[in-house]
Image 1: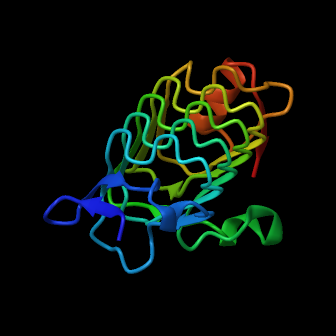
Image 2: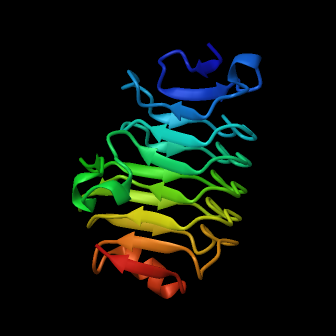
Length: 193
């Protein structure tokens, strides 16, 4: 079907979006009936030129290096069971990362996605962590909203959002969180929610 996994279906190795049946792909939903998928491999969907919306399953804990880099039409990245944040109360719209798990967005995972405007991460509890690697969202010129809620640990590289417009980008964060501290210390606008 154009999506290639390892033998246990825990890692998406390659997404063959160049075949004719994928030419008009707008939404890639990696949450539907896919409870075993834990990782998206390095360069799995790099240069997918038609992808506009990415929905990740709540079990996905690793987004590999350049996994979605150069996806020119990508606009929204969110996790399953999340509604658009502007359509509901913020506290009601987030998947949760719990039980001490770590979500890792690796080096240049979404680099050069010029139309990407919204990224909604799962809310994390005190025992969990979100790690965003260097240049993960660099040169995403239209990025306007990054939602990082929760009391857990956020490990965010100083260069994760390099090349993004600091005048337009707003982080929605929990008060006194590591995500708030990152935004404040790196000159980004933020709003406590």
